Length: 90
Image (tube, rainbow, N blue to C red):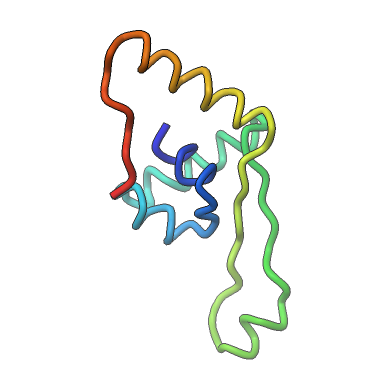
């Protein structure tokens, strides 16, 4: 759920998602892949000129979909009903 929260808050780059959630890459990237396969998130590669000009690998940027927002809202409601503290980004 922390990854969906990060996406909903506009965190879009994998390393930034790792920083925001405190989760390692071996957790974040498989989650993002599952979210994409389930239609909860989408991604696009940045313009190839940018990394070429900056001499770095291309970045893939993620965004939450409407289905992802619905799933997040449902999860947040479950937390609220159970009286659990809401997940926070680091």
